[in-house]
Length: 55
Image (cartoon, rainbow, N blue to C red; front, side):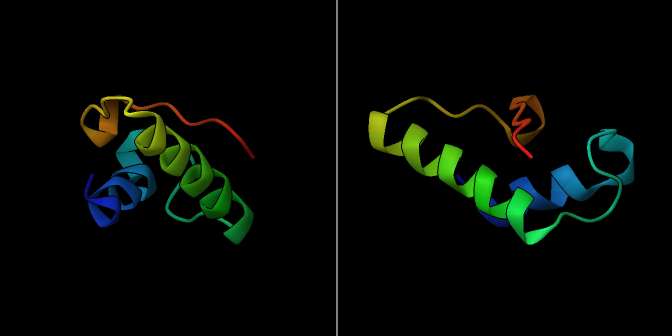
């Protein structure tokens, strides 16, 4: 997965998720979820379809 594209899509104003910025804690939480998904072999859909709601 292209993580730069993922985080850019999350930060996009139109995403409705977090406005245009994330705290380091939010980034770390999402990275942890993505890392675990990759280790488990979970197929990752395009970034806009993944809902990661940890704060």
